[in-house]
Amino acid sequence: MSKDTHSAPPSPLLDRSDVRVKHAAGLGDTVSAFVDRIRSGDLGSLPVIVGLVIIWTVFTSLNPVFLSADNLVNLLFDCSTVGVISLGIVCVLLVGEIDLSVGSMSGFASALVGTLWVNQGWPVLLAIAAAVVVGGIVGALYALLLNRLGMPSFVSTLAGLLAILGLQLYVLGTDGSINLPYGSTMVNFGQLMIIPAMVSHVIALLPGVAIVLTGLRTRERRRAARLSAPSIGSLVARGAILTVFLEVVVSYLDRGRGVPLMFAVFLGLAVAMDYALKRTRWGRSMNAVGGNREAARRAGIKVSAIYTSAFVLCASFAALGGVLTAARLASASQQAGTGDVNLNAIAAAVIGGTSLFGGRGTAWSAVLGIIVIQSIASGLTLLNLSSSLRFMITGAVLAIAVIVDSLARRSRVSHGRA
Image (tube, rainbow, N blue to C red; front, top):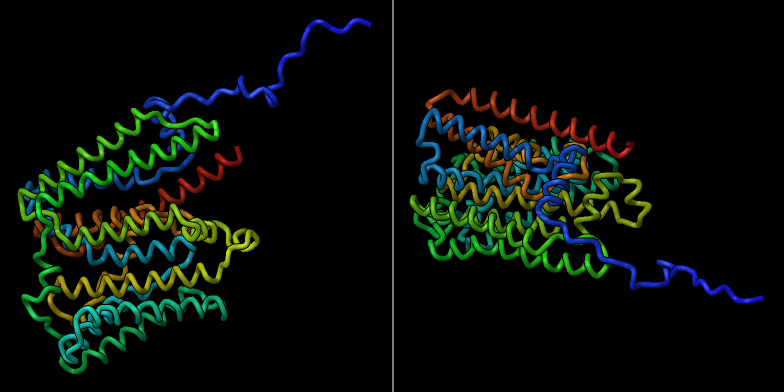
């Protein structure tokens, strides 16, 4: 028999010469992917950004002073205190839990710093460290009650709210308040310290550079795996747009006092937390536990350790937020941490996009959410309107955020089934 002279077509599994790397995703593909995410219910930060634009437009039309450089600088100072507390709330919400005692914890931390520093003569940094450590111990206690006794965090932290408030009153004693040394570094940090203009402009360059460098590394890894990758042009465009935006913001704030150092510290903590949640095994475990605890346990994740880390971070951030509040007010008093501090910290995380159902949220949720809340407070103050309106408007915004989150979650489930 004669052999067949026609050779068989090369197998795509054996002949790698026919394998082609998918074309780089251009700007049009990026926009299309963004639209697809929106349709699938992955709204990200879009709702809160749209809401923030609406809020700023309304208040500016009613009082142009709202968007003045000086008012925005004061707004950023005020955002930093509760914003740091809200970073901790993001941690516990990610794992599907809650901490209702963050307000009391912040007030107790401020009282502890005042007592140790002013009354006992401790070095200020040692007093601050002691307050943060106490916060971490309280968070570990909440985690112990949840992991060992199965006590719901709603109950344990509600009990903690009352107990810590009692400790705050006990530490402050009959005087009820402690004035911090005016003119000290701590008080200046909370009220006066501004980043030099040149330094703030240099810092504004870093996020855009980071986007480009990180995108290039991701692009090379995807190309090596023969997957579609964003084009270099789209990466440069994203970095350039962000850089121009930040430079314009910094230049505008420099027309007033400048960028507050305390707000820069708040953003630095948000960046560190964002990196930890997105780029580390711990962060992926946090999202996994919040999404499905049993599945996470079966995957080998130490669920109890993840819960412990979330509560420890939350209480520690609450204590640090209390220290910043004391620096901002130059005092520690019985009113610190009471009122709407607790609710604003939780509302900021939810309004910013962190899901109450667990498994979804970022550190930037706290940043965006607290800017929304403080924008409402600042705008109503400039209009000389009653604080009752602030509570009602903030409550309405919170309700809308939860409704959007619920609808988006339902849309993602439906899209996944489809």
